[in-house]
Image (cartoon, each protein chain N blue to C red):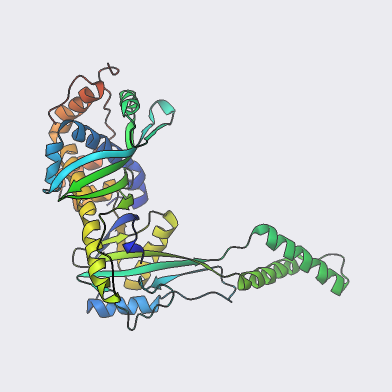
Length: 209
Length: 180
């Protein structure tokens, strides 16, 4: 479980709203609908979905315990396959040569070339196992707060998209402006001041003695 | 609210000012930071600080790292207009210690080391271990939030333009170990 590891990275979010209906049932349904799909032995290059934090490679949200006290804990899993471009090019060249020999053509049309490339890519991706990345999250539904245990741009973007699709709720990433505007209890007047603010200079009055 | 990506870039400077202010406060008035966590024993700069100077159409990055590294070069960079963009912090409270990096532009935490949790003996211990880790993580989340809220309330107050900027500038010049 990533959450229990000795070193963590964390991005904070504000969850806008609460799940409709009974929270546990709605969230369980959202997790089941968008559970990670295995893509080994399939031509897909990428799969994104939810998984259990304690059983990331055998999720079963029918039985899963994802409620810990008042927090919900589950994980985003991103599986990706990668085949180096050089290997794809080599196999495309070989397949094109074979097709020319079989059909006794002098050259292949653009459509035939694309068809060969698609076939080769599908064949190679089917043979490559996906490399999984699991990122835990903690959701405090009552407080409308969510911590995502990654600072990676791609992982955070995928989280925002999948979360909205699964639970019909928006995530707002907490960074200096959003934190000040939404979470620091500023008055309307203070928020106006914030909006108009520009960078300050801390080196007024000459160089260091 | 403004478009999120526009707001992220437009107000990035607030995060850099926050970390620069935090250094100033740690150096001049650490007691005032205890508002962020009443149990705080200490909050100190750890083994890494990154400063950036984006003035006069040039980007300059100064990284100071190492457990025994002095911050003199950082102070010189401040006098030239640089601000702190990343900082490693050591937070002690209740006899426990947390270490983490924070980035001004995102207010995110990385390399977060919380105090050790109890060892899990059986799978039944999982819930306890998870809740303990959440509690320990929440201490840092709340600390960062409360420190930032303390900064931002000062940042939007009349005192900011009239007093705080001058006090920080005096601290940067080294001619005042300010009154916070």
